[in-house]
Image 1 (cartoon, helix red, strand yellow):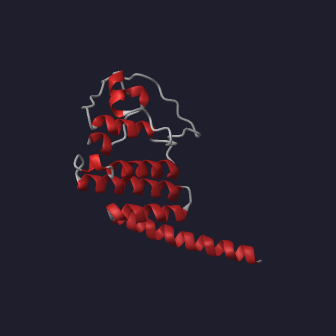
Image 2: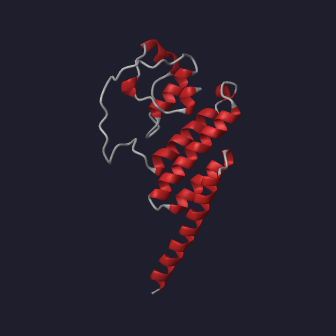
Image 3: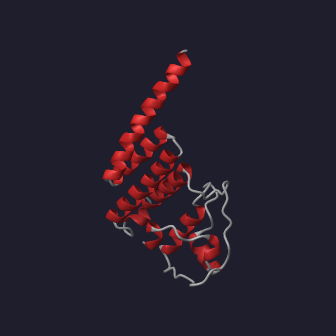
Length: 163
């Protein structure tokens, strides 16, 4: 459950036996991102995951990291979590209220990243997805503002194109 609610694991922070991979399967190579998180979710269904308590590597962050915070990466994480939660074997394992709260937060995070990037139409879509699971005042206000800005920018673009 904790692995579903928090995405704090990375390949350099996890130590496991080969048998565990034989049980849950390898990375899902169809995923552009979140393939590791998906695998750890599958692991957590069979085994208790314990923190190692020490650093096992260094992480280099730069603007072209696949895992950098963008609307696409956040939306990809939300979609992966939704797909995982919809698996028949998972339905009995996860509390529906926890799933709704987590998915609401994940889609809201995607909407915020799209909003920061001035991609207001995508922000509206992500906030609307968030509202399917968890409606908050913050997400409602940001969705309304994103809608307004998308219309305003669209109107400005049409005016410029007509000249």
